[in-house]
Image (cartoon, rainbow, N blue to C red):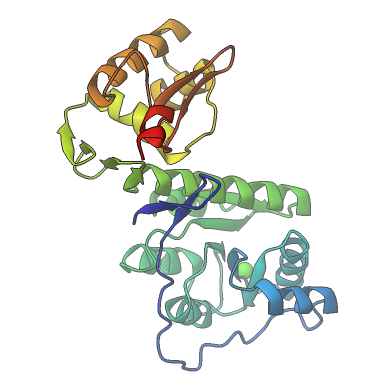
Length: 287
Ligand code: CA
């Protein structure tokens, strides 16, 4: 996947929507009977924009509560009471997140999770298990299967929303970290760690790569030194904000034409650093 830039300098992903498989008998069998008219209207207008959540859970009350709560937060929700139906639907139309009950009448949640992880198209969908109190063993197994989180029933709507959003945010950031960035002539490929500036190959250390990738993924956004330390160096760090300055200076020497007049890595006095994908003033004048 690669990024492109809109006119405001933001980054958009050119991700191609997944092509649905031929329609079969995998329409949702059971959702809440009465989604409010408001949500129906909403779904007609921007169903494509909203994040899709699938819940597979045999207790209808829970499906209803979860659907209501998440729709109110702007999610597109589909509920299933049977494991097989849910899985079939996901194969037809992948979701952004799956809420999985563990004990289901047919295919249990752990098995569904295993099958999702074994499916090339579905293996990256985050899974949150819904577990009843006392299902300790299942809980552990669930996490070993690659679940992203679990929620113990009964749960509050607020807790549910917080967990769902946290998992989606984490997923988004993980996806960002693995995407090719191409901004203003600087191209970074996280899979190969290759970097080019206007087609010229540049050698960066792993840390320099991480730092530049973060900045270039968010052109114009100002990052404070502390934020950069958190994101690039992590929590277990024995470094000071000064470390950031040193690395920025090295990066400038490698990617800028004139390190003393940086075009890409700009200092924002009193705030931190930002990446600019726009041509520098002098180059703009030449055109
Ligand atoms: Ca159950």
